[in-house]
Length: 278
Image (cartoon, rainbow, N blue to C red):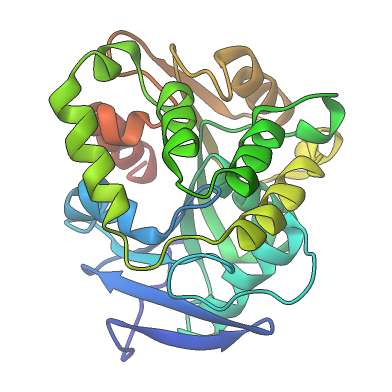
């Protein structure tokens, strides 16, 4: 069944959904495609490389997850499942019954839960840099990130930690690119607070869907970078093997990091568009 297109709604705004105030933007026209960002970042990162390309074929809906950006701050702990229900609630408010969904990192976890909890609303699923069971690990990078976030008032150590985990060696050796990216991220008028980051981190660290992936029915594409340190290829392959019929793609070479959508946007966007057009 083709994805439902969005009709007669504002191109941006805030809606009340699942007990949260969720900020969203809509770009382009065509079948609906929701983009869900990873831990600690708002939807503005999607506008750098994905929205301009994907909105030529799809009506792209981006949202700020609870606790980041222009969405409301939570008042209690929550789960990845709760965040998937946020997406469903937003779709209700936008009168979208079915959609494609692309999630990055924690956004891919939200995508998995959306596929399990709201299967009748999902056409195709793209999981970028996914992991399905951080709860099974004694130590996870996000545990370290969360501690540094709460212990680094200047944000300089946290920023450096993020860069070394998220980006490729080729990027880190380009000092101008690093400085420009750091300046861009620092200019965000809605930085995530340590308490909000901790709530997202706890949801992330307690996530385990590995044994439930077999119940995902939507056609699924799993994409990972060869140089991804956060969710290396074997972790992403574990996700792909757990989902019946899932396609698995590894992008190789320079820029094939956890943030491959930013470092290798042409390759990433083409994989996404080709899959969603099938």
